[in-house]
Image 1: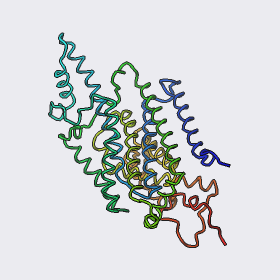
Image 2: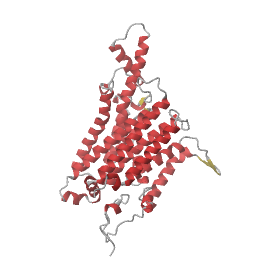
Image 3: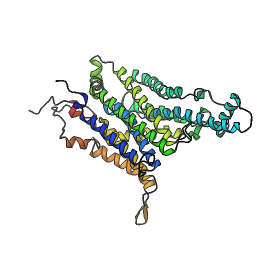
Image 4: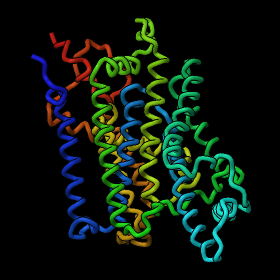
Length: 415
């Protein structure tokens, strides 16, 4: 008897149900559509957290399932934000310029409008010309296409060069980190066409919807983020549950043997690298309109390292683990860095949460690595009484954070 996907993977249905209940609860408690228990700023924080959970899913797919530790996926995340930010800033500036020129009595010409937009956006970097990369900034559909095309093309080219050379392990991690650093350093320059260190701002203002309150806009983006996370989780869960998932886990555990069996390992890696880059870019498209600003610091290599920490804390090789890790760290970071928590006096010194938050995060990461390599998700293994299989001394693979005991499918038993 053939069972449905949800019957074979009840955790997926549980996750979707919990996400739907969470979305409903936030909606009821919001200022826009509920009784106002949650402020607009906190709704934005929750929406951004959902976006970070989506990019954590991408990281878990490529690292937890395929064993490729990429330290550059937040670059794709930020590139998606830059692409949509260009349209948001251009269209909103166009509205302001048109209104200002209309007060002169004579209708403004297209050239005057274009010059006014360029001056408003790039005057801060001492320029009055619109760079060529802004040629499509007036069109939302084109910028949305670029939001996926630019990160996807970068990932495809980088992945093709790296995987065809069979760069693996820590060397690949260093290369991805170098790519991220190079891109960030380039965007810090004023002549990059993206306003250098100033970045893009005012992204929370949707063009044509100036009369709509921010509490309603924040809920729209929250719903969109929840929908993207739900669809992303469902899609990736289906992807890793079939033959494709078995192959990428095999590549993680013994790449040479998979290649010997005739599988195109490089093709699988390239597809996975590009797919996860697209997912990260989509998360960035939804994240930065809620953040309101983006600058080159968002591409700093430390951001991608944080992403790896989130996945490790939640539990690699478990999609729900990546979500748990990203959500927990994001919300705790928001709480500890908000400045609202009281300092704790410790004799001659005082514990300032804002200053010590990163120390606590690093300590938590080290503790998880040493004492709970399966992360928070390992707790569910204990609740389900899932144990590692007896393999007569032969390890299943190098990644203890993955669900090795389920991958073995209990084919071996103790004598």
